[in-house]
Image 1 (cartoon, rainbow, N blue to C red):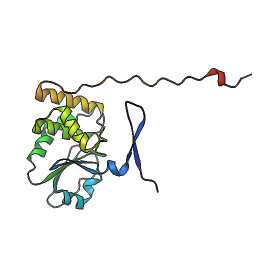
Image 2: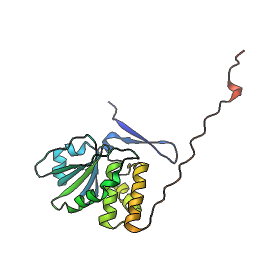
Image 3: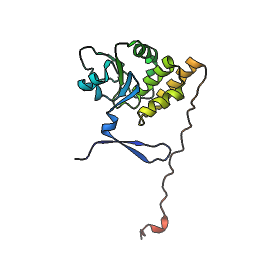
Image 4: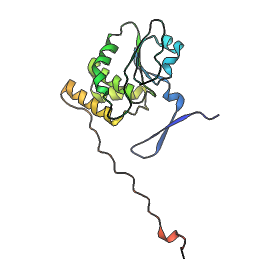
Amino acid sequence: MKPNIIIKYNRNSYKPDVISFHAAMSISQITPTLFLSGADAPLNQALMTRKGITLIVNVTLSHTCPIYPGVECIRVAVSDLPNARLSDHFDHVAARIHSNRSGGTLVHCAAGMSRSPALIMAYLMKYKGVTLRQAHNCVKDSRPYICINAGFWTQLLDYEKKLYGKNTVKVAEPLDPLPTPKTNQNYLPSTA
C-alpha cells in the first residue's frame, strides 16, 4: 500500500513539493517547551506524556480536544481561510502559552501548516522578542513544510508593526499566472 501524500505547489517554480502524510502529522519542537503539530498528534496520549505536554491549543473548528489527566485543552475556533480573524487570538493565546509553567505546550491545527504556525510566530514575537522574519525562520527550521495563508501573513505583519513599529518582511506581489499554452496550428489535423 502506498503512503498517503500531501502535494504543496512551490510558488517559485510551479513544481509540486511532495510531503509525506506522516511528516505532516508529526510533532515538531519549536522551543524546549513549545511544540507544533497537526490534529493527529494530540490524540496520542503516550506521545503527549513523553513530550511533557500539559497544555494543548487546538486551532480547529471541529477536531477533538482530548481529555488526559493533567492536560488542559483550549480551542481557538478559526477557519484556515484568508479572511478569518486569527489575529483576534494572538495576544490571549501567546499569554496562555507564556503562562504555562507546568510543562510543554502543543499548538495544533488540522495539518500544522497554517493556523498553528501563525499563532506560534505571534507568541515568539511577543514573548521572545524576535522579529517576524526571525519567528518565521525559527518555525520553518523545525517544520519546513509550513504554508501560512496570505490573510494570516497580513495579520502577522500588522502584529509585528504594532509590536515593533516596523516590518521585517515584505509581501511579494503575486506572480503573473502561467501563460495559456498555445496550440501549434501546424500539427492540427485538417478539418476538411
